[in-house]
Image (cartoon, rainbow, N blue to C red; front, side, top):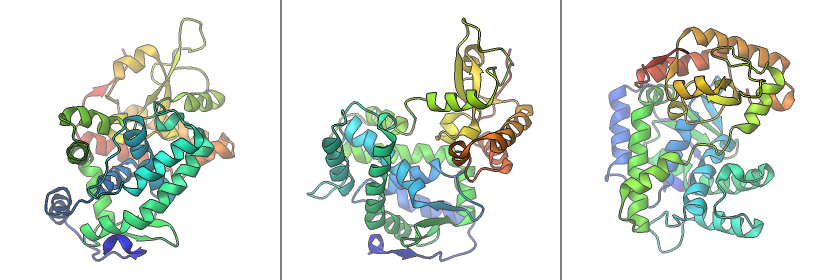
Amino acid sequence: MGHKLKVGELKESYLTDEDIWRVFTNVLSNKSAKSSTYKYALIKSLIENLYQVNDNVELGYDQLAYAFAKIYWNLIVHHDLTKQNRGPKNARVVTEMKKFQSEHGIPKDFSFDKINHKLQLKLVSKVKSVMKENVFGALWGDTKGLFYEFDHKREYFRFQPAVREFMMKYQRLLVNLTNYHMAKMVEELNEYPSTQYLLEKVESIAKRGTLKPFERILLSYFEAECFYCGKDLTKSNRSSHVDHFIPWSFVQSDQIWNLVLACGACNSSKSDKLPERGYLETIINRNDHLKKSAEDDSTLLLRNYHDQKIILLYDYSIKNGFDDIWLPK
């Protein structure tokens, strides 16, 4: 059985978009056996980390386990959607989450990002063991070894390069499809009457509760001024905001190289839009400065970053329909 595998190798070196669509369609359709919501959560975790790969298009298990843990904490604990599989016993991730919450006395209304950082790491480690046993091999089997390879001993995951490019090209569509099918399955398992209600929960689970930690980091290395219009943010009647340069609804993760300080007016009017392309050079220069001046802890936030990533992100966001370009008034 695929989910018991400890190593999975890539089967093909060349795939067309048509080949990849065919496999994705099968994975999301009723042709693929779905005993749990794990496969959807892994696809969502991969999408969140598309721009976090190293130069060999590899991801560490910890990166994926963090995204996976965040998804299930907010479904199972925060929203009380505790049925995540078809079997008579709870899915192991449910058992681990509920046990962890009870042992550490964490209120159920806490979103994942409110949990103490050290406790987050402990939970991610437990979730990683669940993924090794039940997740990586299962989706590898469903995709016939065409999409990625993995190795439990080395704890690495490597995309088939064409598949990653495909996922970036059709990212918005894949997010919507995965969210919908995951919501449908959670609806069925938990006997909820409204897919729309659950869709809102599935769509919102990746977003952080607060960007304040990033605000403190940015203010410690840069002047308190709006990235877009240059307004001074230190005056008493002006507050600073943290904005996703590439809209969060596309990138679906919080990376300091994509976060900027903004005034309230710019943050509000920009909303879900893409800034004018001229700002790309500005943020690239900003990130270069951050890499050179940041302390060790902040440098970790720029791990695997290079200029081409944010350029790719910008270009692929346009291809995914974010073509309403914004400039400050």
